[in-house]
Length: 508
Image 1 (tube, rainbow, N blue to C red):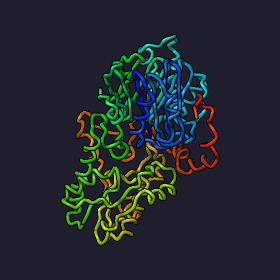
Image 2 (image 1 turned 135 degrees about the horizontal axis):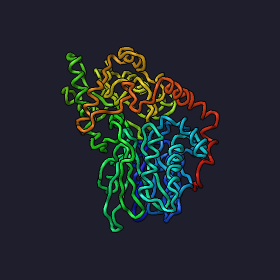
Image 3 (image 1 turned 90 degrees about the vertical axis):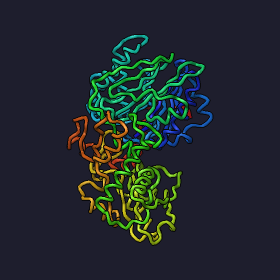
Image 4 (image 1 turned 90 degrees about the horizontal axis):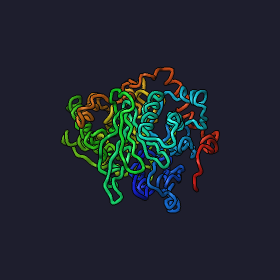
């Protein structure tokens, strides 16, 4: 999962992008990057680290220009090398840079074709570099000194013909404009907006609407599945559907966990969706355990707070903040390796003993993925003096890998894979466990936009919308992207020393 943004403004594109990335930081805490175009001259700064650490005053002074793109990374496909921080760049044609969110599912086929047929060199193991080179090759076909919107859309159409998976991207053509594109199923989110200034109409394309809100951009609309949005350097907007749209199936996990609650995705309020998740979970709990003895509902901060509060209201129970969060610890879900996740859970949360001592506590979390957080927190509650500890998940059991941009590549790393709810209950140490029903989860999101009836729910139901994911693919994916493989690459120096030539000059 990553966050991306592109802007066409009158001036100070770098400052605009920096501010946008700070509100998208939750989408990727591994690396950050900005590239701007100043009258055709490109300026780049990227590195591993948080936005506030990657960009200093000296960098911002150099990130001048009228347009640019930015990216925060949470690596899924590829290593965590600083060279793989985005934006990526190729000089031909025109000078192209890309920021990408999601995963391509046919990367092996594409990499082979790029080498044998397109005669392009791929230097990294990132599917983002592959996507950029596919677009570059398709755009090269126009053979013009100055590409127009029709040429851009033809290139995007070529990308859709060749690339499969769940992806959103912003691509900058040096001196010409910014293009945003979204996969034909709309799995990964992308939205754009405008604002009127003394310099005329300015535009922003971003992963979440909060990036627009922060700087006074009004939402125009979400980028449609298979659509491309092109804003030229003069601020003219061009849009076109470049691929026959498939079934619109946005990722339901955005509403469960990834997105900020104050964002709109496909016209659905994430905050309201999480409220409805809590209501429906409360109704299920009341139905299956009408004689419960819960004294207090306590959320596991932060993303479960909204659901937990509504669940407590629905059951007329006390709601209390029983954990204090250390905000200087990153999101444990995206950390590589169980040992690091386990250590970070204890660093991140501290229990308030008074809220637990002698009470029957219902802990509410947004989801249970690997089980690390749940098990550790249940033990923390018991250590704080809880009499009984119950556990509720606002999402169903995660039993299958995700291949569309969420770092869940291996079913073997999911605590619920191949297990009953009772077995998970025992493994995490809860007195009892309750999961949200998938139909209720979908209904909680769909109520916000009745035009969307289907969601990408493969982690829950094992159904892959692109139709190209089978057991052979999943086994190959697990072998290269599981925790052990990541650890081996890092130990071998892959993440530190290799792939360092795959970019234009990056100012220190």
